[in-house]
Every structure is written in C-alpha cells, then in structure tokens.
Length: 396
Image (cartoon, rainbow, N blue to C red; front, side, top):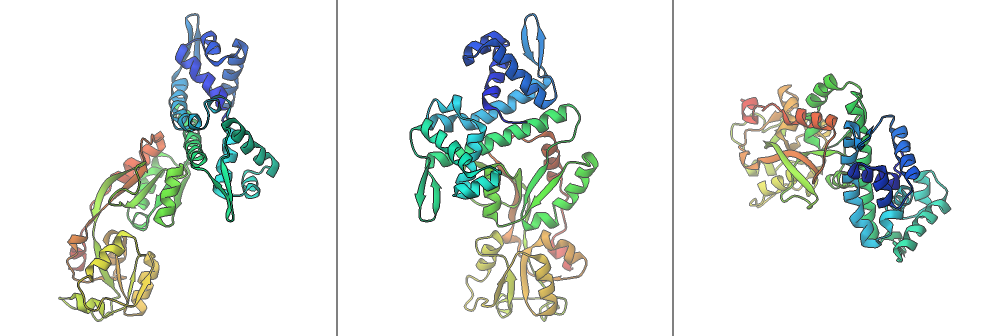
C-alpha cells in the first residue's frame, strides 16, 4: 500500500463523520474527490472498509482496524509537522518525508538517493519543498556532511514511526482475513539467542509456519537505535538500570546470574574452594566494557590488590568455549547462556556463589507500542519460559 497521507486523512474524516458530504467539507474537497480517495485505498488494500447504507457510511471491521493504526500514525507525525509549520500537516507527502529520513540518515543527498532508488535532484527537490513550507532550513552543512536540525530530526523520527504503524495496519488487516503477513524482527542480545529464542521460535512455527522471523544481532546501542526507529519490534536480553531513555519500556521476564567457567582440564576445575586471588592469576575472556556482565566482573575484583591483567573482550560463547578448552583462560558469562554447554560437559562451572550478580532479563519495547496479533503471539511464547536449574545444581 502506498502511504498517501492526504487520502488517509480523508479516510479518517469519513470514519469520524459517517458521511462523505461532511468529510468533504472538513477536508475542503469535493464529494467525488472523497469517494475517489476511499476507492483508491480500498483497491490498494484489496478489501472493503465501509458499510454503505441510507443512514450513512460506517467503518466495518477492516475499517476500524485501519482507522486505529492511522490515528496512531498521525499521532506521531502531526505534532512534529505542526512544530515546523501548520500547513505541513495538510501538504507534506510521504515521498517528501521518506526523502527527509534518507538524507538525515545518510547525511548526503547522493547516498540518500541511492538508498531510495531515485535521482539525486528528486531527493533534493523533495527536501527543498519541505524547507519552503517550513520557511527554515532542515539541514546544516558541515565538514562531515549534511546534519539535520533538531526539528528535522524530530520529524524524521516521527515519520519513521508513522510509516511503521501504517505497515502494521496492513498486517492487522491481513490477520482479519486469516492470512499470514508481516514479519517478526527481534533485537537479540547474546543470552536470548541461546536460551529464550530457540524454543519460542519452534513453538511459533506451529502457529504461523510462514511468517518471516528476523533475528538481528549487534551492540546494544545499535539494537536500541533500531528499536526506537521502528525497524525492530522488541529487544530480548539483559535490562538496563535505569532504563536507557524515556521512550522505551522494559518488562522483566526472569533473572539470571553469572557463572565463572573453565575448560575441563583447568587447574581450578577440580578445587572445592576458589578465591578471588586464584581467579585473578589467570587470563580471562569476558564481555565488552559497559555491558552488565562486565560491570559485575569488574566489581568482583574491585577489592583485589592484583586484578586480572590479561583480558579478551568478546560476547561469543563459541569463542569462549574453544579458548577455554585449549588454554587456561577463565570465562565470565551469563549462566543461562552457558547452560547447554555446561550440561554437555563442554565447559565447567567453578564453585563460586554468584547469587549477588542476579540481573533482570526481559523485553525492551517502544513506549505505547501496539503489537500485531503475530507479534503478540511471539511475545507470549517468549514470556512462557521454563525456569532452569542454577549453576550449583549442574556443577554438583
């Protein structure tokens, strides 16, 4: 579906007034223009949105579904448009906003044009039209490229979220017709890839065998940025304290502790009592600075006169396992992430009480996010986790 913003505003006016005539007056259009706009939306979606009777024009079930998402889309978009210019609310087009988003992210008109598959003058003209309506520049030229002004950045972010809502609308409409549509996009931190997601995906496939599932990996900051832009549906992994920013919400699923692991032949693997000084004398593989695991690791040696000096920074369990089994390195990792490796005897948990490292694991979503039916089903499966035995039970 093409996002014709003006047609969608006409659609909402008809939903609100139950009248083509009154909607035409509100939108300053002729009745044939309103009828044409509705017909085009219905044709693009392949479904009827209204029940037409002598008493008026009333949204049917599909119309109600679309209206809910369209209201949410304009709820993001309109405040940002009005901040720049009242007229923009009525004249800004989706093509102009897509150009704005691309230029803001690429910080270059040529790169933005390539991303959109358009000619550079077309993108430049679209942004210029917005600037003329706003009566102010939307980008500043610097030695590093073209940087969006604060207002332009706000509008680009709002437009991204508005377009995400309209995409969700198509998925919701397909669901009313018992059709699979859309996709699940998960920002997966290391723990979730080993413990939460495999089971959830297996169960989800029984319900929706065709819905694409995209698992995105990367640094937390990158995943969070993708979530806030509407590119990622939700994040799964260690929660941050405090929450990283006000426009996201964190939901606790369970708690996890850390575990200190070694290879089976490590000198400490057979000891009943292991001290901090014992640990500090060996090389380590542990997560990057700034991660929750690394903070707990650093705190473990805070009072030590001789903290570890040989450290490999990585969140890869595979690298950790292989390094532990061919050297005397030790690893500090999420217990649940390492659970399968511990059960199989591929690595060994050292006998340390790390209950004080308990940390919340859960979901991070955009504030006021409304999932599709498929996304809600996936979230429910993620939430129905099974408690795992603690590291002391596996090492006993």
